[in-house]
Amino acid sequence: MNQPTRSAGEVPVWVTGVGTTNPLGQDFHTVADNLLAGRSGIMRVTDLELDDSSCKIAGRIGAIPVPPGQDPAAFRALDKLQQLILYCATQALVDAGHWENRGKLRVGLVMGVGAEWLRAWELDFHATGGTLLRSPRGDEESLIRVVQQQLGLRGPATVVAAACASGNVALAQGKNWLRRGWVDVCLAGACDLWITPMALASFGRLRVLSRRNDEPAAASRPFDKDRDGFVLGEGGAVFLLESAQTARRRAAHPYAELAGHGATSDAFNLVIPNADPAPASQAVRLALHDAQINPDDVDYINAHATSTSVGDTCEAKVIQSVFGSTVSKVPVSSTKSMTGHLLSAAAAMEALACLIALRHQAVPPTINLDNPDPECSLCHVPHQARPQAVDVAISNSFGFGGNNTCTVFRKVA
Image (cartoon, rainbow, N blue to C red; front, top):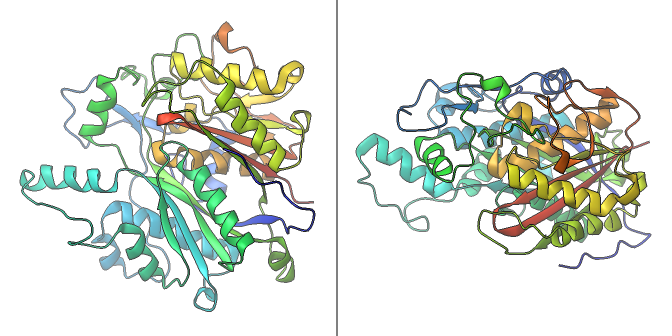
């Protein structure tokens, strides 16, 4: 899919607010500290009946804090996915300094949310045996509409579903809304809560989950020769996007410029990555072209690498194809080694990792990378973060069904 060429007169779009809760923390600074320290958020799942599951570990988030403007009792009565989106979106508005004046702005809302109705069905099954029939259009409003109303936002709102690439697609959509003048600011990101018996059983039957149940922190091993599958994670991240012109006018402190986006769809297989690196490579090249940068301008690559033998190898070929002779110089890491795979929220979590790299001028590590797979020959950052100048960071997210995306973030001078 072709990307529009950016004209010289287009105003840059900045990320000026962040809201998150994920296996590494519930705010930007805590997550940054844990990510750069190489701490794992993977743990044993103890609150679910998983006797028949081959994988009994995951990246968990615990209780979600009550955000400003919410009655504690009413908030706790909400579905946890709704709590998650409300918390992340509210924190992004607060962090950007737009919470108090949100009613005066056209605030867009673009969220990647996975399996909203499947999750509702499973919860009902465990609660009542599955007796409730749900009609999304007739019985209740969509989750995104409810969140929009509770936050008091006026502006367009939509959900995007591009599997693991959903967060990147949401960011691209939010940026487009800003540039078309449809919104004054935009909340964009993704959230997912899919640590359930059905999810663990389904992915387990696909034989893509790690079975290192006795050593949770060492289970997610992207690019490692001894990897045996990925680990599920939960949580999300929401970003406040606004034009650089608006942000400068109010003396905002940006995290980064959302500089470029690229996407292709190869529809190779529902769950198996395409062994041909060309379609995913094209997504990366489109993102670099959109940001008007060359491969040798990139200082850090946050890889999609999930810790599966096929997926990691395919992505290594993509990176090698795009970066050519410079591939040995561009640091690559997979932060899924610490958070697990957040599914629909994966791209949002890894966009956050890029912002951390830009803010702290350090590349997060791939932990558990004890024995690098020779088929994944890249400039790895094993075990410990690497302090270095980071002006441009890119995030690859390659989702089920051949959703290939790449997003470019650039340091704001």
